[in-house]
Length: 155
Image 1 (tube, helix red, strand yellow):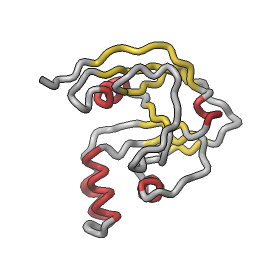
Image 2: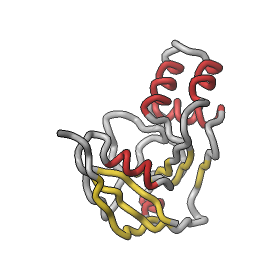
Image 3: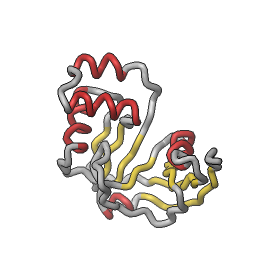
Image 4: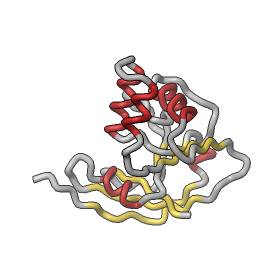
C-alpha cells in the first residue's frame, strides 16, 4: 500500500519530531491514504511543497489503534492527545481533525459547546484519513518511493 505525506520538503527519511502543539494522535510522523489530502498539506502555506510517497508494509508485532470513523472513542482520544497525553500505540489511524473540526474540538474542550453540538457540527465534513507513526519500529514499516512537487498559490 502507498501512503502519502505532504510537506514543504522532500522527506526521504521520516522522523518523529516534537512540536509546539500536540497533534490529533500526539507526536508522530503523519501520513494519509489520500493523495489529494497530502497535496493540501504540502501547499497549505501557499508555497510550493512535496507529496512524499511511501510503501507501507504492516508489522503484526506493532500495536495499532484504528478508528474507522469519528466516534465517541475517537473524540476522547483526540482530546486527550491534543491535551498533551501520550499513548502506548506504535501506529494510530483514523479521521483527521482538520482546522474546522479542530475548532469544534477546542470549543468542546473549553466547554463552549456540548458533546452533542460537536457531533452535529462535525457530521457535515468530508472524509479525511491520517496514519500516525509514533515509534522507530513504526517508521521502519515505511519505505520512501519518491515525491512530486505541489505548486502553491502564494503570489
